[in-house]
Image (cartoon, rainbow, N blue to C red):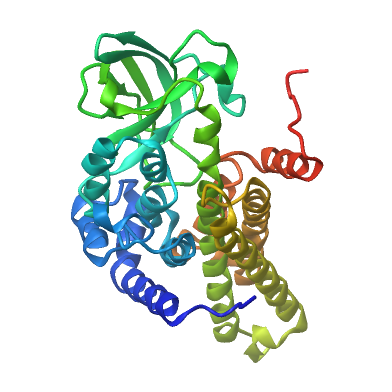
Length: 389
């Protein structure tokens, strides 16, 4: 057991840190103020630097590295803002990985090189007005029609909707009840019958476009099948890595809050000395640091141990522990950072209040903290708990 990063990992982490801190702070502030997604020209810069393909196969334009390397990059971008980090999240731990893991060779060759180059993004379209946590209640239908499926339904809470070119769309592909009838297809934004609702006004997550998606007689080629009916379990297995990415987005926000609080408390003076000289402030900083370090280690454990899993993905137990803990501590750490900064922490110009708002989202997105705790308990007991009975 070695807790040191390799030289290659440190170099990658340093490259991501230098790029993010040199190129992205001004963009992040503008995205927060005006609520727009990462521009295509910057996406191409991400691609040129290799950040969109860290753990994707070399044959498709990726670097072919591991999940831990991907999370090291994601954390550095998330320290600037979740919005500038979101394309990294989607490419390295999100829906692109579902395409890479389960889609046909032809579909992979079509989609993944575009993502690695920053020419396209892929979002996941799961939730519906009547199906969120209870995802198997979804009603979007894919009806077989010759060499196509015809999709009808509506999707809610799709992050990236309207901005992304492609959508991994969960749908009911057979008459089998519950999970047995569910699969996923890749829907292109340009397909006839695809439309989007108004942009959602959220508490945080500015710069991460969120909209409803309406699907009306959308004809999707059968070659766009990612997982057929009955493959719901496969789709869920890919979420071990997504949970680690979600946790890393939380970690990046918390780590940035800690970094800012440490700097601020050494500059701000009260009663003739820096406020860091007061023991109460020291205790706050120490508690913030303990939580950040613990979250990072839980995430790294899940990512490193994925190599020992049959599917090469983080386990439900370790990824759920990492996600749940990081989701909880980011709220505590950012709130503590706001408190030690006083009025400046509450002021929009200084960024800490944004971290508080953004930090709350991750414990809702990708499965709430309560859902993660039921996952943890189920893994410990060795059986799933039926929430319907």
